[in-house]
Image 1 (tube, rainbow over the protein chains, first blue to last red):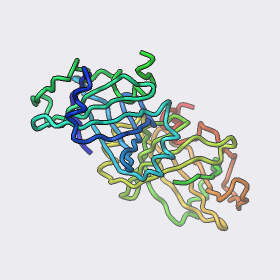
Image 2 (image 1 turned 30 degrees about the vertical axis):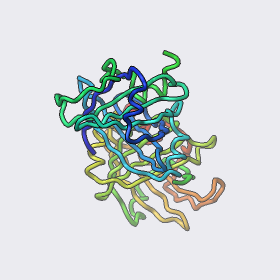
Image 3 (image 1 turned 45 degrees about the vertical axis):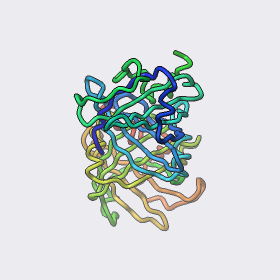
Image 4 (image 1 turned 60 degrees about the vertical axis):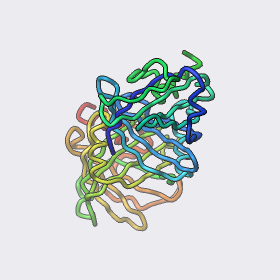
Amino acid sequence: MSLEIERKFLVKNNDFKQEAYQQKRMQQGYLNSNKKRTVRIRTTDEKAFITIKGKSNKSGTTRFEWEKEISLEEAEKLLLLCESSIIDKTRFYIKKGKHIFEVDEFYGDNNGLIIAEVELSSENETFEKPNWIGKEVTGNQQYYNSYLSKKPYKNW
Amino acid sequence: MSLEIERKFLVKNNDFKQEAYQQKRMQQGYLNSNKKRTVRIRTTDEKAFITIKGKSNKSGTTRFEWEKEISLEEAEKLLLLCESSIIDKTRFYIKKGKHIFEVDEFYGDNNGLIIAEVELSSENETFEKPNWIGKEVTGNQQYYNSYLSKKPYKNW
């Protein structure tokens, strides 16, 4: 249980892929995608998690987050209960200075969308910006995965 | 993870209280009360649980259910995220033949409402009916706890 402080950016090109030290395919769905509280089921790397997030603060940077590991078998049953469509993406991990950027390349109905996130220890913490980073979209709900599961990128 | 098969009844009087072999105070809230999928946080007896239920079948008897224990501290944080009001009730456990009736006496905005449930191993299983059992309300969504958290009994 923690507060998640992060900033979010669009990604300009595929250069990040060469810098990634790890990548994971992920599928995730939402039992609730209401912006005041999301309940997410995610499977990745033979593991699965249930994650609950609260509403963001005003700047969109900080959110309450609670996560628990569950079995893959449980996750598969729970994914069947989810609202609307399942998000399918690969997450790339890139180290820059003392931070790790997580870059999500989306498939299916969100094909073409690439989003980078960096987790910070405080709202005003500075960080090194990779040159493939584009426009900041922190707090923009259209780029929440919960939103993308209902209004996918292909329909924007 | 299981299928929950149960029937639900209104309760005519307080006679059930003398027959109870156990009782527990419970508080519970909903992170999602959509009837297709509910996500419930419940605290009782110094324990806490997250429970996800799917949609009922046509008769209203059978529902998918998944439950995991969480810490009380986690539950208290998650209850703050819940939609609308928190349900407060005492659950009484009464043995009748080979079945256990769970009778919920509600407080607060649902004061005056008493509901009995009996869990069955199949939809057509017979069971001994206590004489304090009233009208059957199986499958009636108005009596779902998730519904009561949004539309409490006092406003009916």
